[in-house]
Length: 68
Image (cartoon, rainbow, N blue to C red; front, side, top):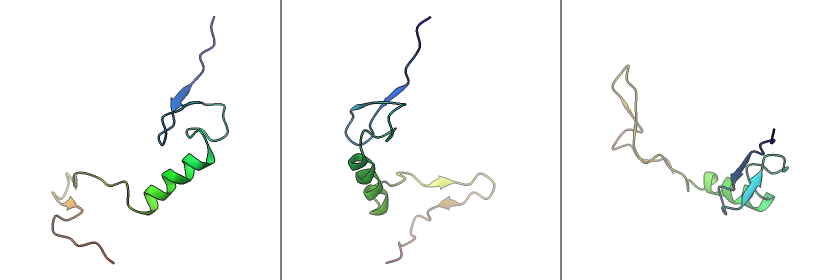
């Protein structure tokens, strides 16, 4: 029986990364820090509002302003 090796592509650069590598799912500390920087600078956003089925509210509110 052949043993399956789990791997993914690095979300930052696309390089194949094995699960056994220390920076998994990133290929390097550099790619990990680039991804963290995108989160910290609001580079990743939710493209559509999240709907709460119990109250019918949308989050974030359509006309809500971001705090400075």
